[in-house]
Amino acid sequence: AVMLTIISIGSAMTPAGALGPHDNFGQPFYIFGGSNGRQFTGNTNGYTKQTCEPRHAGNSGGHSIWIQLGSRSHRSFVRMNTAGSSFDTLLAVYRGNSLCGGLTRVVANDDCRGIGSSCVAFTAQRNVSYRIAVDGYAGASGQFNLRFTRQNI
Image (cartoon, rainbow, N blue to C red; front, side):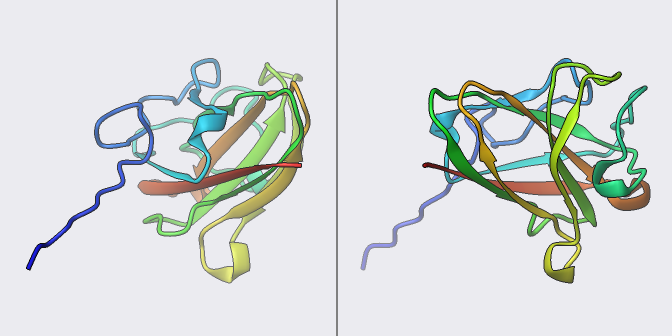
């Protein structure tokens, strides 16, 4: 008998698929179109909330990581969730390039279907970049999973 093991590593950023240090809004982790259907992992322990950072999903949070969804030449339907994370997550998507007065919330969520993980879905407009914040409810932090799909429309 032959045993076959398949391992999915998620993001190509590091061999483990982990998001690096992207605590700063100005230095986000980038997700491009080729990342469709991937899972990214990271840890928000020790991360901070920056001056002017919004209350994600209406909660103060306190340990956010920033991700940027690259723009495309056509519209797409985007879905993200944090199922399987080790803490109660907040997930928010914004347009804009500056924390202080330059962000517009697109969508945000806390407790998708009441399970402590978060989920969002939105239509990404053509040639627009989006900033994504993953944070923890009431300052919670830990290991998170971010699942991502993008479908052209």
